[in-house]
Length: 295
Image 1: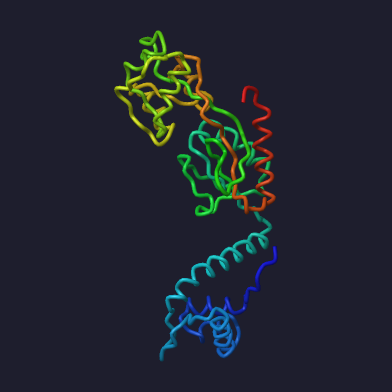
Image 2: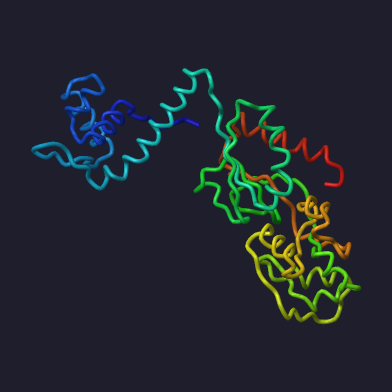
């Protein structure tokens, strides 16, 4: 990629002038003459074909165009300054921004993260969670972990593993269930995908028309599981992501059939070139999955 010419001196003069609203004070900060700052700003205005400042008798006022340009320039210089400071301190860590669907984060990733952090101290991992609806570009993410089909426009998707859905409920509620159709007598807890319970019932051999009398929709499997743990109903969720709750006996899986509705995927923008930190993280993630039988 050939990067277009960036007039860095002119942008620096503009940014300092905008902070001080004065060419004179900007010149003092930059250790140049006032005329040099004024000349650089004028050259930038000519290149952009807009006025960035209104020249007033006692200083400057940003135009609308100047107000639009300033945040981008300021963030860029702040980022450069922070990175250079890290180098000077001998403690540079490459940032890595990863957005993870909450179920995957709590059920699989978080218990393994200490190993990654200890093995890669030069990577500054910045983790956020989402409910499977995430805008990678707008949120400035390097990677996201999503659940679904893997067919997302503009994204490269690497498959991780399946996580079939099964009913999960308290042991007390499970004792009232002798066959899959018995779940219909209880409140069914579900995600925003309304067809999951009917699909699971068909997979479990319930071939007559299904009428779901009571249900509660959740935007997060984590909230759904907590509701099930408190006895609010039967959750349809991936047991592989809630092994700790199952191991403690707080919830049980009354029926074995699982409904596969998609996979977890590691995704990034197709236009995004892999950074060294991205390559390390993706390789570590795939190695962790390969070393775990049953996934």
